[in-house]
Length: 265
Image (cartoon, rainbow, N blue to C red; front, side, top):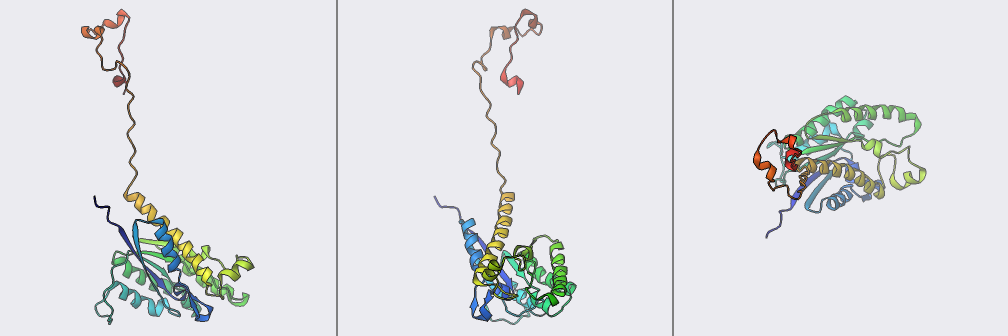
């Protein structure tokens, strides 16, 4: 007897240097995709996990993200590419805005461009998990201004509602200033990027969120079946007593009443 066919899950990890796993001034790349894949394989052993990392260091949502996403989704035949068509993605994990904020691009403008990027994926029946932008470990002089821009953008991301669209508050999950000095040294490489351990932790946190979403989806598609309560069978419940043969509705005054379990159900 043939076993059940294995399910497939294809995920695009899309963004800038934080998606690429940039560390050590570009001497090391440790994308979170690796740890994310491990977590998904452990959580869903019946599923073939296929991930693709597309993180481009220095890229901005305003100038580069849209065409890159279009190429992945074959959104426009006018795009020049010699790459073979890609299999469709089930999910796109999108993190962008760090470089735009550094270039003082307004939060509303970044958000509008992000919506275009998300829409390309969603239009191809690819669900989106949008990450909020993590904080930067800059000095006190410029921190308030950067925090205001980033918080404004993150509020817009978290407030976005659309079918097939999910958010993960990565900014809250991966702080800089709230960490101890030891953890900051372990997980943060500089004011913007993470260490290899940091990118593994990033993959863990994103993995927990995505596994939770996928598990809920599977539960909704396959709700548990409540077993029917077995009825207790009583001795002589199916027998017919002599008194019942009379079928006299007034026989109750003769001192007997026949009650069956089925009459009480």
